[in-house]
Amino acid sequence: MEGQYIGIDMGGTNTRLGVVSKEGEVADLLCLSTREYSSWADFSTKLTSAISEMGLEGIEVLGIAVAGGVLIPEGIMSYSPHIRWLNQVPIKESLVKATGLPVFLENDANAVTYGEWMYGAGKGLSSVICLTLGSGVGGGIILNEELYRGEHGLGGEIGHMCVQPSGRLCTCGKRGCLEAYSSASALSAAYGERGLNGKAGYQPDALQIYERAVAGEKVALDLFTSFGEHLGIAIANLANVLSVHHYVITGGVSRAWELFLGPLEKALEANLFSPHRGMVKVLRGHLRDKAGVIGVARLAADYL
Image (tube, rainbow, N blue to C red; front, side, top):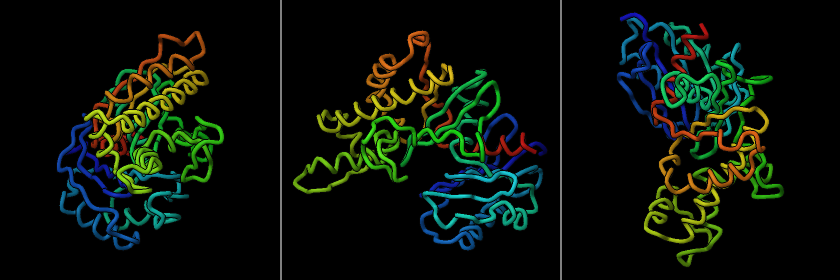
């Protein structure tokens, strides 16, 4: 069937791929382990095998989304903080040779944002900003129906906005980044700092902390309050600068929505420039784990 695209969302832990229609429907969704590999040569062999199994008849283009800086015309990762063996790898050229398809490379948060804007919670809006809450914090910006990439393709790094001067050390080397307060890794690290369970440095994962919060544990509840407050500050800053009033929250940690939404909204209103108060809306993403696959497939088709 004509008008189908392959979308690949490559994360540090797992890679999802599927065949996407023009209507944003996904067929043959597959999940591969990324962390088992230590080189593009080995991983790409597995990836291209999975693509071939899907069948290439009727496929017009392949899109692949990866966390980090992307040089779109060259199809190269300028840096990948979570998959270091991708740094400077000519991903586009490699996949073109392996599949014979046109290939488009994009940042993962931009792909998620585009998917939610085209088919999800942001559908029908002229401007929307998306925050992806996973191991880190990613961001994507749609301004006046255009994906904003900024100079050198590095726009939208919302996770590295400072929300706490001289605050916690972030993996990027700076202090006080949103990612150091409102991500899965931040939750684990902050819990570990409390020295609970008689074990210094004990770090349950974000899901375990969520379960403890639901069960009423004060420490876990306090962490999600802080999580939401810092998100609210970040969104207020974005609204004050860009005058965008719609924000979509996605990613694995967004499943704790009911625990952080209240603190988020309170901090948001407290930090908004007065003309924006009462106008900013925070929405939950609709596409879940398929957002990146759908978004990068549609981006690839639109780019070509």
